[in-house]
Picture 1 (cartoon, rainbow, N blue to C red):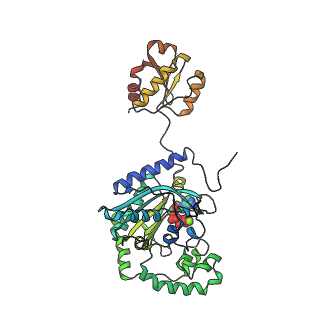
Picture 2: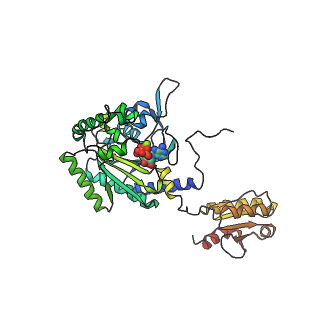
Picture 3: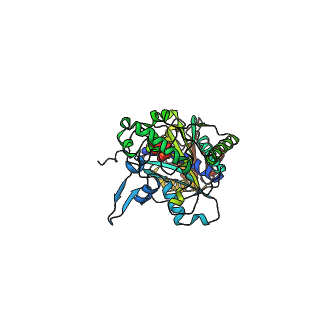
Amino acid sequence: MINSLRGFRDILPPESDLFARIEAAAREVFGLYGYQELRIPTLEKKELFVKSTGDTTDIVEKEMYAFTDGGGREIANRPEGTPGVVRAYIENNLGQTGRNGKYFYIGNMFRAERPQAGRYREFEQIGAEHIGNPSPFADAETITMLVRLLEKVGAGGCTVVLNSLGCGECRKAYREVLLAFLRARAEKLCEPCRGRIERNPLRALDCKIDGPALAETAPKLTLCPACAEHFAKTQELLKISSVSCEVNPSLVRGLDYYTRTVFEVRSSALGSQDAVCGGGRYDDLVKSMGGPAAPAIGWALGVDRMAMLLKDKPAADNGPKAFVIAASKEAGNKSFELITALRAAGLSADFSNFELSLKSQMRSADKSGAAFALLIGEDELKAGAVALKPLKEKGDQFTVPAAEAPAKLKELLKL
Ligand code: ATP
Ligand code: MG
């Protein structure tokens, strides 16, 4: 018996159905907002993540599934989607299409973290990236889209937390102030933070160990006038689209490329892994990766955590409409013909094994969640008929001509 890897899991029905529901809702919402799908590879050059996500981030420093392939190439399983989208944008000259650079992706990500509830080594993200628009209208639009998606899937009780990290200019001055503050407390910091404050002092504020305490006492960033205006306008627009947010100056996010607006969606229903979605503006990333000057904003939603939030919401009944039963050995072919006709008419239909006993097939029908059992036995075979038996509601079995069975079933089910 070979088991799955630690931190990797099977998503079984009915949970798999929740995933599909979330994905379907996302596709619908993306359509409303003019987003197109980008399907990017799972494997990329490791360097892509080191340069974009950042070499002082947890993701790159500790969590990457990186390896050297047979040809000696340094490769990584993607830990997040943005670097791949940005690479694809540059590599395929997507900035020159003349269209809005609005892309979404749906795919699995890999991070070698300590597995626990809501934290897996392979997990799914739905992500949106709007590349080429520096305006606060884009910030407000993308956050509004995210909130509408949460509403659509029925994830209540979520809070949107918002902050601005300013631009390179605002951060230059802040870096020095923060670094002085951190140096003075260096011996109290965790080992990894002590090692990286010189290279990236902001990272300490996002540290799972030191972050919460530091955030309260650390000096706060002062935005330059342009960044302050951008942030104020973003909030003003979010009011117009009826999105309520909580501004939290301690929100710094764990990735290197963020500028200006950053946000997170949290749900207290999730316990300690409470972040459902994270995102922000990355105005310099595309250029720094060798592309055109294309300011951008995006977010990534954790589908596994979202599914946890929806666990108690029963999925729409996904049993078949009809369960076909061959009540005698000779009825197999006719039953097979019937199930073919039902499906051709757009009715979901299933059967177990026409070679088994009536009793056994009936038991399967009951377990399937089907609305009706459709039986063909000796009598029906002779008469060219089908017997319909309601399984979910009370009612007697009755017979219809075989050719009329699909239409009759539709009528009964009000389809
Ligand atoms: P966290 O603080 O929980 O580690 P993060 O800041 O690392 O989250 P992001 O990189 O912003 O997360 O990813 C966006 C979303 O992806 C998260 O809000 C979360 O819902 C989900 N996510 C991240 N890591 C995991 C994981 N290991 N397992 C399941 N979902 C995850
Ligand atoms: Mg993380």
